[in-house]
Every structure is written in C-alpha cells, then in structure tokens.
Amino acid sequence: MYRTNRSFLSTDIHKPFLLKPVGKDNLWGGDRLNYDFGKHIPMSPLAETWECSTHPDGPSTVVSGIFSGLSLPEVLKLHPEFIGTHPRTPGELPILIKLIDAKKDLSVQVHPNDEYANEYENGQLGKTEMWYVLDASPDAKLVYGLHHKTTPEQMRKAIETGTLEKFLQKVPVKKDDVFYIEAGTIHAIGAGTLIAEIQENSNLTYRLYDYGRKDKNGQKRPLHVDKALEVANLNSSSEPHQPMRVLKYQPGWASELLCRCKYFQVERIMLNTENNQNMVQMQVGSISFNVLLCVNGCGVIFYGDEALPFFKGDCIFVPADSVEMHIHGKASLLKVSC
Image (tube, rainbow, N blue to C red; front, side, top):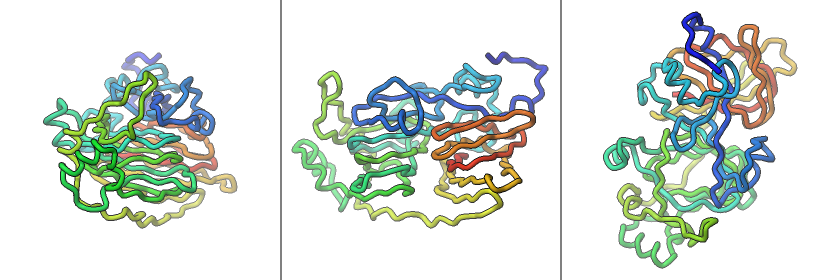
C-alpha cells in the first residue's frame, strides 16, 4: 500500500491507475454487468456499478500501481493536484461515472440543480447527467420530459391515481444514442437498456412514481413528490434529437465529441492499432484529470517502462499532468474530463 514518501519525484506518481467499482443491487437490475463486463460482483441483481466515484455512498478503490488498496477519495486527498486546475468544485472530483443495467423500468424521477441542492440538501451538488446507450432491446424506450405543460396539481392527482404515464414523453432508444439530462428534467431509463452514465458527483434523486413496486423486504419504495415538484420542469419537452457527431481521424484511432457542458466533457475514442506500428499518444494537460472507460475490446497503456492492460468494463483514472502515455489495442473507450 502507498505511503507518503518525499523521495518520489512528481512524475513518478502521476501515472494512470485502474479502479474497482462498487455495485448496487436495485430491484430493477439484471445480470449483464457481471456476464458481459466481467465485474465479478456477488450481487443479483447487479443494477449499477459506480466505476469512478468519490461519493460516500459508493467510493471506487484503486487496484493497480503504488496506490493499490486505497480508495479513490484517499488518493485524491493525498494528491489533490491529480484533479487538475479546472474551476469545478476545487479540490474535489466533480463527476461520477456509472454502468447501468436496466432489466426493468427505473422509477420516474427528477434531480435538483446545484442551487436547490446547496440550499436544501446540506450543500450537496445537483445532478445533471449524460447517458450513452451501450445496448438496447428492439422495443426499449426512455422517459424524457412531458408531452405538454402540466400543473403541480395535475401531477399530484396523476401520481395518486396511478395515471402519471399518460403525461410522460417516451422516446425509443438504440445502441450508440446519447442523451443529455439536465437537472429538473423528469426522466426514467426503460427496461432493456444498458447505459454508461456520466453525471455530477451527486446521489440526489427525487422519485415521482414507481409503478407501485415493492422492494425485497416487501415495502414500497418511498416517493419524494413535494421536492420533485419543486424542482421539476413541468413545461412540455421537445423530443430529444441526437447531437451532430463529427469523427476526427488520426493513424490508429478516431474520436468524436459526445457531450460538452459546464459539468463535464465526454468523447468516444475508437482505437485500432492492430495494423499500425505507431501507438496512439494520449495528451493530458494540467487543467483536468481524464477517466477512460472501456466499453468494448481491450488494449494496453504504456508509460515509461510500465504497462497497464485494460479490458471491456475497465475504468482507468489518469491524473492531470500525467506521465507520457501511449495506447495500443482494439477498443472503444469513453474519455471523460472537465
């Protein structure tokens, strides 16, 4: 286990490291994260894995390099410079990355923005998020906002009578779709959807409707109607359109920007150096950390005389001002930064 040692040069510790996630067994989950992504977490169902997290409800653990055995919050407390100099939540990791396997519909919910969360939830962050669809059944849909403007009174009555679904805008989804879910948007992930979620570092969810379901203890999960209606956008929502995505090609790889907002930036990297003698060099500056989530394939990151292999489902934290790195393999990765 790592111990503080002043004999280390700064470049000796600014190296990428592999993270181990925390699993969540929410009642709507399936088993694909274990079988398709090799998580080996003894949960059934395994609904979510919190891949890169410093949140107290589920911090990730480092499982490679000199920090192996420490939690990610412990590492970043020792070395806050790993986060970078971006203005978001100085000294704290501002994002949380999840994999989500929705075998059944998730509850209809809404998240507060930063201002509401700061005032009414003890200074916490709000929750704006982005979904990248890894896979979806042919009939999969998600809830995105409302069909038409609705009043709080109409919403309450619909929740009480179990008729809320008539107000919800349901949108078909397919593999490789991207959805930006701004705080205040009423939403739900639908059954048959496998998603990578990038979000603010928050676990604030206000549940509006849960189909009358009961948990493993036979109890209905609580609703948070009052808070939800205080923060929800009850205006009609236009149907979400897929963003323009422009592929940029370089020898051995291609990239596309999936989302850029004030909370995070997400790119998709398509790596293929099998027939290329030159490995891909990854540029990392001082402004932000980077997180690499491998969503398909496998490869190796080389830095100095060391190598870090990665496989489908692996999540790698790259400190700001990291040592020079080169990547080899055939893989699809999400690259997250601020």
